[in-house]
Length: 125
Image (cartoon, rainbow, N blue to C red; front, side, top):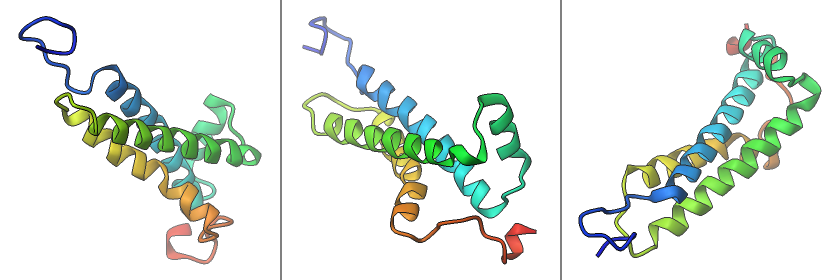
């Protein structure tokens, strides 16, 4: 018997897997924008995000918080769903990978590996 009480239908991650993947995607996008800003402070990607989504350089903390919260949420839901008794699909693995990437910049920032944009690097040119 499957999740919904009918035969033949099996849930592969279900709604929680979808929530974890969407949270991981949004958190990964935030972290990606922050990594691009770290390497190229005057990049067109950061200007596009700033203009279209109302994010400015002073609201870098908002992107940082969003990446940390959504990445942590994606990891937490993916791990909790993975320990369930139901079969799991690729959504759990995808949510784990996206959650780890989403947490990459917040972890580096809180561990003081990055604090301001790189200015003396070949990548910054």
